[in-house]
Length: 352
Image (cartoon, rainbow, N blue to C red; front, side, top):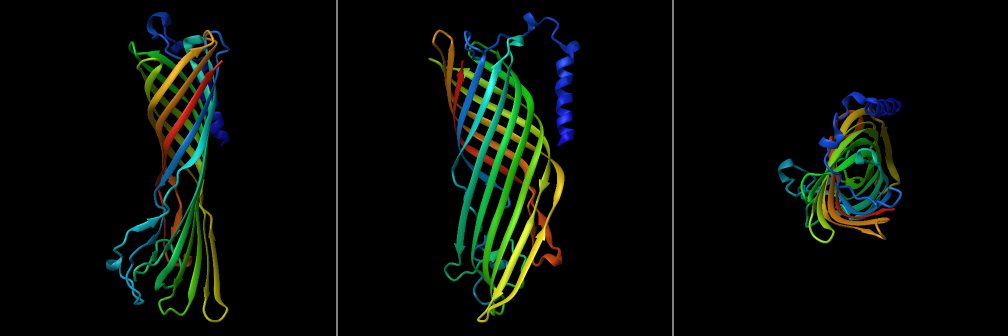
């Protein structure tokens, strides 16, 4: 992480002192700015955004439905039902930011903090004479799963710093390009409980599985905002950005199981595995919506509102380890799935 900070400082220092790449005739070549500004104010602005999102995460199925009958035998050809995963819920989040309109070159600088957290649960039982099969079940021989439950927790924190400029590309069309840095803290956790029997149905076995994929990283980010003016302060907008990030992954796997018959506990087993590594990953953000802006109090205050739909795709951040059968057999695979945040956004901007 220290190396990343040094890299960022060197990157921005290079551009701040690179006088030889300045525009030779800025008054002639630079487009007129189209940014919003409280002309009689301090050039500061505050941004507050309410997020109402849900998540879509790859590789979180936990049980196979319709996995054969209760005859003690399970065959792949009999597994005709769909995979069951935890259904994502809609949850609130927020994004807050502070910005400053720079007089030189009519640029602006902004800093954002995005926060979102979700916690979803699901339970599934055997139905209509069909057995279940555990998708992630590193255990002894299994006849069928009686019931299963799963819990998914996702916790996201993102810090953004960006420098940009709004310019007119037409009478009613404006474009803002920007670049900057991004830091992210993303935690993903999958908890599964299985209740099943062995093939001879002598034992009632309980298995608790924990799989995690946490990543802390940072990198560079660039993007654009488009705005087309309509009437009476209304406009439609779209945004898009991409980030190239590098971070430290912590993928942990834990399994605890116990078997019970008519007598007390027959056996207990506990397994734990750590997997930490560095890896590059990427992120895409895009949104579209409707906005309204107006200057008030003799241009001392600017007020804006936005309503839109936003999606954020984090590529390759699900690096959970899954073990098949017993851990000591070493049969495992690692996810390389994407995580998507999507939903509605309600934004307010105040310049003063």
